Length: 223
Length: 223
DNA sequence: TTCAACAATCCCGTATACGAAACTGTGATA
DNA sequence: TATCACAGTTTCGTATACGGGATTGTTGAA
Image (cartoon, rainbow over all chains, first blue to last red):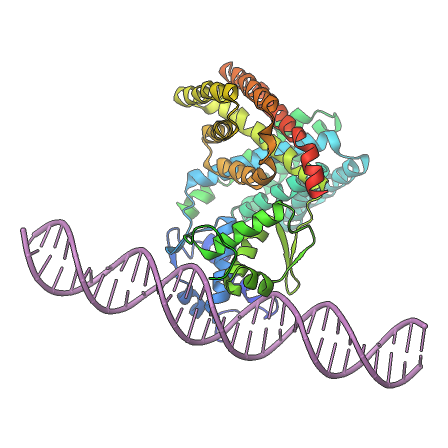
């Protein structure tokens, strides 16, 4: 094994290669349009073509690369417009989930959501970005689950996961954290009042503001 | 080539196997929970394991089958609840697209949408199911495009494609065709008035009615 | 000098082989 | 009789090999 994996050797080789390629693409190490040769990658990661191929197929399914028949695989062009489209779609889907969740969540789920919100106050005061990131994630995923629509929850989670790479440095600024929590509070108010439409509008605004906070970072990363 | 492909030999072998498996699963030939053995399928389709494996991976990505590491691939359990969830999600996403499209479509796009609606009248009168199916599809896809959000359009198209198998026999009844066209007309009215929220509600109702028309068929197919 | 045609090379799709891990069945022991 | 352990088989993940098609480079002619 003469590849460049410094991590543990557990798990599927194709998964490890997929993760490595995901990091390489989202970090900008492999710019958009780069041709990904299977043999080249196989040699680079010290594996054969088969797991590399598996990894590329998975990346193609998730949209990070584009594969043509007999034409190889290239890193997908993530233009600023496309990223903006992705964020808008996310915002709309989150709003959709918030509206449905408002009408369908059980008192227990509503209580758990409010607990999460309460817990996040401490993270904000302490400026603990990682802790808030976890609570933020739990907040949104709880809303997905509260739609009581498993398929919709999966879709929302999948698209959120696809944007995770760009969201990585979103909450680095303490003021953004505080505003994020405030916006969560306003969404919760709308939910408590049973006004799903209002919850949806506030969630949409929340997501779009978070996206805007990323604007400069995105521009300079994938410019 | 001693497999059971009566279709043309063009295209990728893995794609042909994927299509064959998709048909086999959605038609009920392969019930939920069926274990899909790679060697078995390879022999069945007269190919080697490699393209079968590719096909299974693609099916796993689209959700038709579930794959576990070292545990093989099984046909996904499509319970009636899950199918209902999928239809509801589709309805919500279509409504979302209708709302955005109302606010963003150009006069040219609006004209083309109305042309499609006009053309569909003839198909309804003639009872030409296939022709109406094409126009119906074009109607919805034009709305996706009119959101001017390429990513959202792709998502909408993907989820629509995933449900295409169940929608196959949706429009067999002439009265459903006529009602479908009437509902399109109401959606168009809301769009013409510039009322995106109304267009969204009418689109949601349209999709849910179409899903309800399929209820019995679904129940007896995947029961 | 430019364009077209042919040839060579490269790379992808597919086939086959091998090692490892998990499941199963049988036998022995408590 | 029930449970645990071991061996055998099955199947998945990975490696390697081969054929075909596409791209590219070179050469010749206009």
